[in-house]
Image 1 (cartoon, one colour):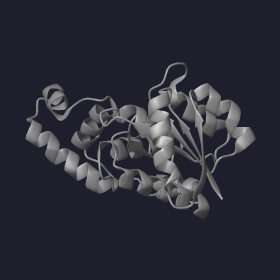
Image 2 (cartoon, helix red, strand yellow):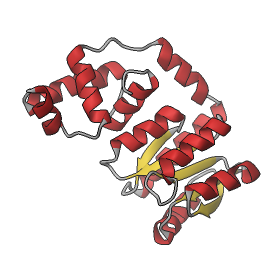
Image 3 (spheres, one colour):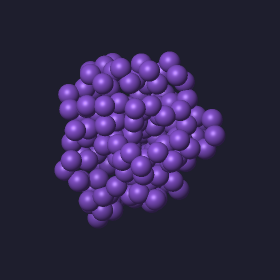
Image 4 (cartoon, helix red, strand yellow):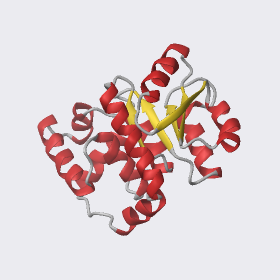
Length: 202
């Protein structure tokens, strides 16, 4: 039996997500929360199998809510909800222990895959072990790759990073592809999250 809590300050978004998640195989109940503060209050009492938390909300916000929840309950299963461009917020939440993220405009199939994957990860109890594995296998990045990764962590576009480093945008993209490969990351958010975890980005 898997209960999922959906946290978003917009009632409409929350209801749409609730309906979408309710249709995911293995999910038996979906509850809603309107703030990070509410998640912190209710999680210890309800212990849902997974919490979907919007990155940007009034009050303490989703990233801080995730950080506080995970610091108090390291095994809490959290999946961040975000807009595509909010790389730093997602990365900081994942570095704090969130299982991953899903963009708000994801299709129902993509959302279902993210939820199923996170629930499977919880069931296998792999989250904390995988973070130790990351630390033990930190890749060696060149100075340029570290600079590009740092720029990404600050939310800079490839063009902005290029201007700061006096490089063309194509050159920045080349460095980005190399560091993605070294980090085993599929995109910016994953790369920056791993960078935070490994202490490569601060």
